[in-house]
Amino acid sequence: MATYLYDVTRRLIGFDTVSANSDLVAIDYLATQLESLRFKVAQQRIEVGGVPQCNLVAWAGPARADGLIISGHIDTVPFEGQPGWTRSALKLDDAGDRLYGRGTSDMKGFIAACLDAAARIDLSRLRRPLVFVFTADEEVGCLGAAQVGPALKSILGETPVPRLAWIGEPTSWQVSHAHKSIVLFDVIVRGRGGHSGAPASGVNAIAVMGKVIEAIGQIQEQRRSSAHPEQAKIFPDAPHDVLNFGTISGGMAVNMIAEQCVLKLSYRTMPEIDPTELYREVQRRIESVPLHDYASRNHDAEIELTPPVVTPPLNSPRGTPLEAALLEATGNHESGGVLFGTDGGFFARAEINSLICGPGDLEQAHQPNEYIRRESLEKTTPIILKVIDRLCS
Ligand SMILES: [Zn+2]
Image (cartoon, rainbow, N blue to C red; front, side):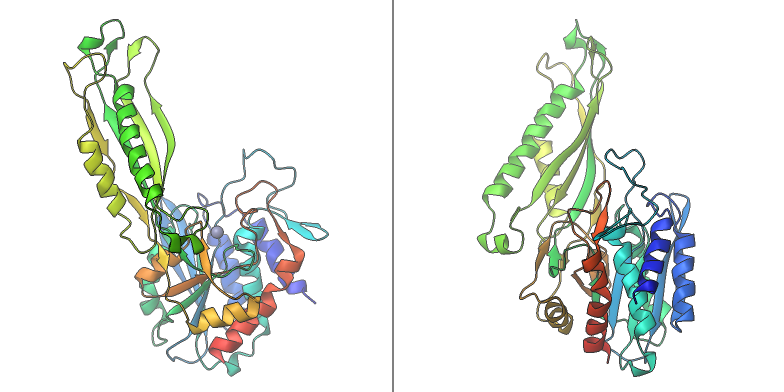
């Protein structure tokens, strides 16, 4: 019965769409399938770091307002070199109640179910447009969504861009209307090298970076203690802005004054605030960090912040028809927040309000031996059909 669902899932897992690789073959396959199901199809070619990538838009139904977007990303996180794999990442491995393979949960299983649903709809019964948007390079900063969002108007032509989108990221079927922004940047401390026996001749970049870390750490402490209790309902794990020291590197040898130190940071701020606010706060605090190291005041280091790379937050309005349809179809009573970022932040910039809800489990996303539960995958098509019925019929 669900042969097509498994066929498509198997094909999609077989395409190596790790973000750094081109997704053209996978997108071409999806386009061909949707075309044969009589959807209008457009491919948006983009280039990321010299690699050709493609977003796919497929739509059906009359050119009226208030349609629905259903969306997923086709790229996956890497698997090569990731410890813990005992199965083949690119081969759908059917093991009873679990289906293994990179992207089964995040989120090729959902995309396969989109096609399975598309194959079962009577397109002549659609009263509002149904639009599938499958994006490239979500895992590396939602780069596909950043480009397809603003282009939808021209791609869809006379069909008005739907204002509601459902993104089937792995949430174990929980409905989410919010996530934090994600911002990445580096702090670079440039000191002055020399022999460690004569510290006064230089300035140690690692020593100065220590002060930078302390200053940024104090911001984190303050944000944590000013957490809003009402946010704990949406983000129970961290109802406040969070900062992370990702990696640090500096110095060349134990007997040399470290000339340079680079700290890579990320932070996630609450959805209702400007994502660059915390960056500016970090800038301000760093301005008052003493630039000399502990050994001498002869020389000052220089501190540089690279520009912030921003993935916008999601803060969708509540009580939309899509929220009602998803809660009903999944048997949930309320929507909350998710810990990860999604394409929804960029869709919001194109005035499209997204909800996040899908069959995979978050604990499976990005893991070795990633799998999706068979039961969860198989109920995806009926849920998609129910939601389409509620919003587009
Ligand atoms: Zn994902």
